[in-house]
Amino acid sequence: MVAENRGSGNEMKVDKRRRSTWPKMVDLLLRVCHVVSSSVLYGGLIWAVPFARLSSWHHLTIATGSALIISGICGSRHWPYQGRGLMAALHVGLIGLIHGRTATMLPFLTAVLVAGVIGSHLPGFIRHWSLLHGRRVD
Image (cartoon, rainbow, N blue to C red):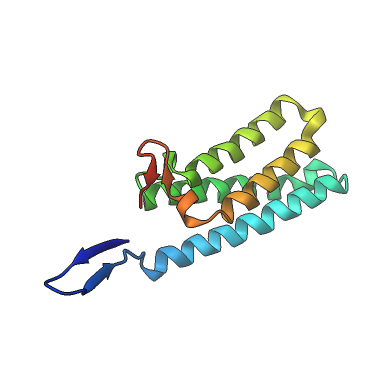
Protein backbone atom coordinates (compact mmCIF):
# COMPACT_ATOMS: atom_id res chain seq x y z
CA MET A 1 0.00 0.00 0.00
CA VAL A 2 1.37 3.39 -0.96
CA ALA A 3 -0.01 6.55 0.59
CA GLU A 4 0.41 9.87 -1.15
CA ASN A 5 -0.20 13.31 0.27
CA ARG A 6 -2.27 15.31 -2.24
CA GLY A 7 -2.51 19.08 -1.92
CA SER A 8 -3.13 20.88 1.30
CA GLY A 9 -5.19 19.58 4.15
CA ASN A 10 -5.56 16.04 5.35
CA GLU A 11 -6.45 14.48 2.01
CA MET A 12 -4.77 11.13 1.56
CA LYS A 13 -4.98 8.98 -1.52
CA VAL A 14 -4.32 5.32 -0.94
CA ASP A 15 -3.01 3.39 -3.93
CA LYS A 16 -3.61 -0.33 -3.45
CA ARG A 17 -1.99 -2.53 -6.03
CA ARG A 18 -4.28 -5.41 -6.73
CA ARG A 19 -3.89 -8.38 -9.01
CA SER A 20 -6.53 -8.85 -11.67
CA THR A 21 -9.23 -11.46 -11.17
CA TRP A 22 -7.84 -14.15 -13.50
CA PRO A 23 -4.49 -14.68 -11.73
CA LYS A 24 -6.33 -14.86 -8.41
CA MET A 25 -8.75 -17.45 -9.77
CA VAL A 26 -5.93 -19.55 -11.26
CA ASP A 27 -4.04 -19.36 -7.95
CA LEU A 28 -7.16 -20.40 -6.04
CA LEU A 29 -7.78 -23.33 -8.39
CA LEU A 30 -4.15 -24.45 -8.05
CA ARG A 31 -4.36 -24.24 -4.26
CA VAL A 32 -7.58 -26.26 -4.15
CA CYS A 33 -6.11 -28.93 -6.44
CA HIS A 34 -2.93 -29.04 -4.34
CA VAL A 35 -4.82 -29.41 -1.07
CA VAL A 36 -7.09 -32.12 -2.48
CA SER A 37 -4.30 -34.15 -4.08
CA SER A 38 -1.99 -33.88 -1.08
CA SER A 39 -4.84 -34.79 1.27
CA VAL A 40 -5.60 -37.96 -0.68
CA LEU A 41 -1.88 -38.81 -0.77
CA TYR A 42 -1.41 -38.16 2.98
CA GLY A 43 -4.56 -40.10 3.89
CA GLY A 44 -3.52 -42.99 1.68
CA LEU A 45 -0.13 -43.14 3.37
CA ILE A 46 -1.77 -43.00 6.82
CA TRP A 47 -4.03 -45.93 5.88
CA ALA A 48 -1.11 -47.86 4.31
CA VAL A 49 -2.54 -47.87 0.79
CA PRO A 50 0.06 -49.33 -1.59
CA PHE A 51 2.04 -46.53 -3.21
CA ALA A 52 1.27 -47.85 -6.70
CA ARG A 53 -2.38 -46.87 -6.09
CA LEU A 54 -1.31 -43.39 -4.89
CA SER A 55 1.17 -42.69 -7.66
CA SER A 56 -1.13 -40.43 -9.70
CA TRP A 57 -1.99 -38.42 -6.56
CA HIS A 58 1.73 -38.13 -5.81
CA HIS A 59 2.43 -36.75 -9.28
CA LEU A 60 -0.56 -34.39 -9.13
CA THR A 61 0.65 -33.07 -5.76
CA ILE A 62 4.11 -32.41 -7.22
CA ALA A 63 2.64 -30.76 -10.33
CA THR A 64 0.28 -28.46 -8.43
CA GLY A 65 2.94 -27.58 -5.85
CA SER A 66 5.40 -26.73 -8.62
CA ALA A 67 2.75 -24.64 -10.38
CA LEU A 68 2.09 -22.75 -7.13
CA ILE A 69 5.81 -21.98 -6.78
CA ILE A 70 5.99 -20.79 -10.39
CA SER A 71 2.87 -18.69 -9.84
CA GLY A 72 4.42 -17.12 -6.74
CA ILE A 73 7.64 -16.27 -8.54
CA CYS A 74 5.76 -14.84 -11.54
CA GLY A 75 3.54 -12.81 -9.22
CA SER A 76 6.42 -11.08 -7.43
CA ARG A 77 10.13 -10.94 -8.11
CA HIS A 78 10.61 -10.68 -4.34
CA TRP A 79 8.75 -13.94 -3.63
CA PRO A 80 11.81 -16.20 -3.16
CA TYR A 81 13.18 -14.19 -0.23
CA GLN A 82 9.88 -13.14 1.32
CA GLY A 83 8.24 -15.04 4.15
CA ARG A 84 5.98 -16.87 1.71
CA GLY A 85 8.91 -18.01 -0.44
CA LEU A 86 10.91 -19.07 2.61
CA MET A 87 7.96 -21.11 3.90
CA ALA A 88 7.68 -22.78 0.48
CA ALA A 89 11.41 -23.59 0.61
CA LEU A 90 10.94 -25.12 4.07
CA HIS A 91 7.97 -27.08 2.74
CA VAL A 92 10.00 -28.46 -0.21
CA GLY A 93 13.05 -29.05 2.00
CA LEU A 94 11.04 -31.20 4.39
CA ILE A 95 9.77 -33.20 1.43
CA GLY A 96 13.40 -33.71 0.35
CA LEU A 97 14.19 -35.19 3.75
CA ILE A 98 11.53 -37.85 3.18
CA HIS A 99 13.45 -39.24 0.23
CA GLY A 100 16.57 -39.57 2.37
CA ARG A 101 14.81 -41.12 5.37
CA THR A 102 11.83 -43.14 4.17
CA ALA A 103 11.52 -44.87 7.56
CA THR A 104 10.43 -41.56 9.07
CA MET A 105 8.11 -40.64 6.20
CA LEU A 106 4.94 -40.12 8.25
CA PRO A 107 6.43 -37.67 10.79
CA PHE A 108 8.08 -35.69 7.97
CA LEU A 109 4.84 -35.65 5.94
CA THR A 110 3.01 -34.40 9.01
CA ALA A 111 5.62 -31.64 9.37
CA VAL A 112 5.17 -30.81 5.66
CA LEU A 113 1.42 -30.56 6.16
CA VAL A 114 1.80 -28.33 9.23
CA ALA A 115 4.35 -26.08 7.48
CA GLY A 116 2.00 -25.74 4.49
CA VAL A 117 -0.97 -24.80 6.65
CA ILE A 118 1.05 -22.32 8.72
CA GLY A 119 2.60 -20.78 5.60
CA SER A 120 -0.79 -20.36 3.97
CA HIS A 121 -2.31 -18.67 6.99
CA LEU A 122 0.47 -16.31 8.03
CA PRO A 123 -0.54 -12.65 8.30
CA GLY A 124 0.36 -10.51 5.29
CA PHE A 125 3.10 -8.59 7.09
CA ILE A 126 4.96 -11.88 7.63
CA ARG A 127 4.20 -13.42 4.21
CA HIS A 128 5.43 -10.26 2.44
CA TRP A 129 8.36 -9.53 4.80
CA SER A 130 11.60 -9.58 2.82
CA LEU A 131 14.72 -11.21 4.19
CA LEU A 132 16.86 -8.99 1.95
CA HIS A 133 15.11 -5.68 2.70
CA GLY A 134 14.33 -6.29 6.38
CA ARG A 135 10.79 -4.97 5.88
CA ARG A 136 7.54 -5.69 4.07
CA VAL A 137 7.96 -5.54 0.29
CA ASP A 138 4.99 -5.98 -2.04
